[in-house]
Length: 59
Picture 1 (cartoon, rainbow, N blue to C red):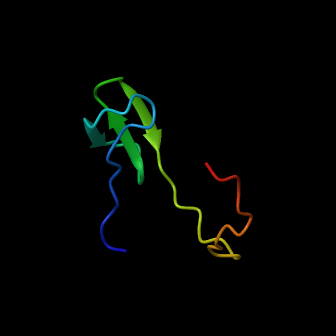
Picture 2: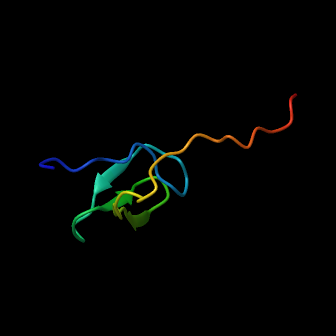
Picture 3: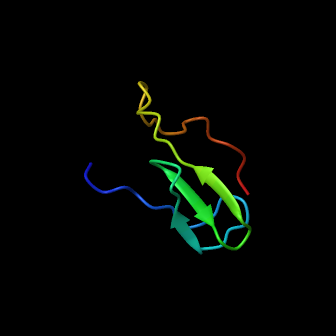
């Protein structure tokens, strides 16, 4: 992957005023709530996606 994926919203306050941080790869700063956070991709799950066959109550 040549480009870094950017978050759209701050996970703390939900504002969109985010900037890359100088702290390293995946680090972001929110100008609205003055918080810094880091995003990290952990990997793919071995089981993959499975449909929910449990059903549920009808509304």
